[in-house]
Length: 208
Image (cartoon, rainbow, N blue to C red):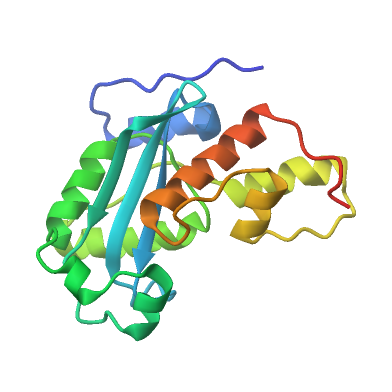
């Protein structure tokens, strides 16, 4: 087994960061951040952020004492459909963080660490759009998609098995408790546990 990779603490230039992650697998990093967003839409070109959740994984363990749970002041696009899914009403979000402040806190929390998520490409696309608009910033952290890790691990054992990669199916198959579904912190925590099970645990025998 490869040794865990410690990310240097000092600030990297862009090219040094890219070179480092060309040489090291992100899922072997000493510190990884599992993130999740709750948004007003599933279209990354239009989605506004309602809440941000993030938890730290350090040396193969979930560190619940280091987490981020941010609510964002309500965007104009918040509608009944979003409220039914996320249970976040306009009244719940009034007086919460301006989006720019929430994004600054997220960047400070994640630093240069690899990002872990489910359907992570969506979250990253939404974050990139808002970071560019709010702060003139970008997001180039390495990414780890938990459903891709699951697919690779299962396919090695069951190459002909048709896989259901839905969030709830992965959690059930990996025997991960789902608490706070459709909340940013709850989903980020569940994904972190899925990742740790895939890295350390064995697959169930009844996948067929």
